[in-house]
Image (cartoon, rainbow, N blue to C red):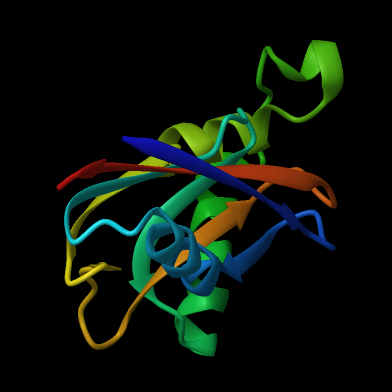
Length: 133
C-alpha cells in the first residue's frame, strides 16, 4: 500500500478540473500491477467523481449542483456563508475507488477523474492511495 499526494490549484468559486493525468502518474510511480486506487480529497467543500470531461457536461454539472444547493437559507451560512459548497460536496462525495490493471487506473474510453471545486479559488490536496500486488 502507498499513498501519493498532489496539490491542485483552482481559480474560480465553482470549477471542474480534470485530474486524471495526475492520478495516473501517481499510480505509475507506485509501480502497482493490479489492485485498487482510492482517490480522495480531505476537504469539506470540494468533491471528486468519474464522468466525461466534455465542455457541455462540465457546464451542466456545475449548473446542476448550483441549482440543487443555492437559493436556500442554510443554517451553516451563519458561520461562514458557504453552506452551498458543503452541501454540494455532500451530494457528490469526497472519493472514488477504481480498479488498477496493467499499472493504470481502469477507466472507460470517455471517463475522466474530475475534481469539483465548490468554494474556490483554493489549493486542494488530492490523495491517491493504491493497494494491491
